[in-house]
Amino acid sequence: MKKTLFLFAFLAFASCKKEEVKEEPLYPTTSEEIVQTPVQTPVQLGEEIFKGKGKCVSCHKGAEKLIGPSLQDIAKIYKDKNANMVAFLKGEGEPIVDPSQYEVMRANFVITKAMSDEELQALEAYVYSHLK
Image (cartoon, rainbow, N blue to C red; front, side):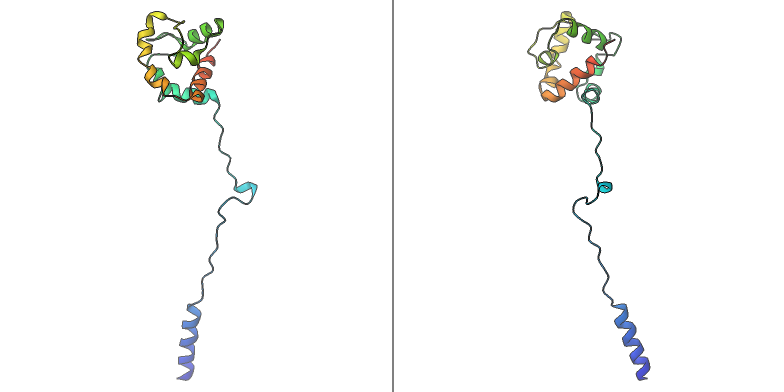
C-alpha cells in the first residue's frame, strides 16, 4: 500500500511540473526578422489618389478627353508653359489647359485643397507620368 501511495504521490508531483514559457522579444533581433515595408513612389501614390479619394478619374482619362482634358494634354501644356500644377490644384493658379471647363474643376477644389503638399505633388507626378 505504501508503494502504491508513493507511486500516486510521485505521479501527482510529476504532473505538476512547471511549464517553460518562452518570451518573445519586443522588437526584431535579427535581420531576417525585420520586414521591409515596400516604399510607394510618388507616381504610385498619385495614381492611388487619382483613382481613389481625389475622384479625378471620374472626369479625366489618360489619353482621351472625357469631361475634362486627358492627362496627356494636361501634362504637355503644364510642361510647355512651365506652369505650377500644384498651385492650380490648391485653387491658387489660373486655368491654362481648358479655361472653359474651369467652373467644373473649381467644384473639386474642396477635395484638392484638403490634400497635403505631398499628395498634390504625387498627383502632379502621376499626371506627368503620362507625357509621351
